[in-house]
Image 1 (spheres, rainbow, N blue to C red):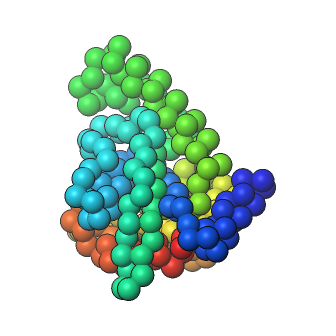
Image 2: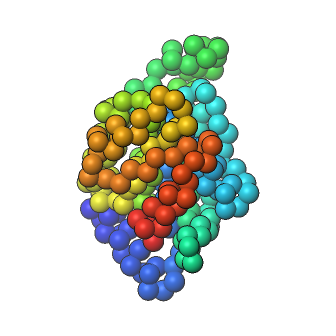
Length: 209
């Protein structure tokens, strides 16, 4: 509760005194495109990338932060700190990494780092002003991770946008995510191709300014 009050107080202070950056965390399960989205936002507005993208799950194993990314929306703007987090999972098994060609020792190391990354991601929730929750539009949205994260955000009263990613793929069905979580705003995008990013930037401005 204290973190929620602190976050709302910071937003209020910012509106009055002309404000620090809004700290936005990018959350979701592994391989839904969190780092691709972080890279897209940062590259659109600064020309740089924040992290490496890989088909191997849990490629991002430590929180990465990029400060003061200024996004322009119509004649207004908002300044963001983008916090790219490791993929959230309820279970991490080193054997899952073996199918990607990693040796057992490396797979165990990756699994340990991934578990530490999940803990770090959860700790960061106490220091955020809002969350972009990324879901894969080609997958079933009713996963334990998605439901748990949404429940956590609602309990903390953190402003949240759901990002339905990978709409460029033929099997994408963003309407499933919209129907699954009608109480929240869902923005369908392709972080890889840049599709519908203008709608996401509008949503970011409206939800987090």
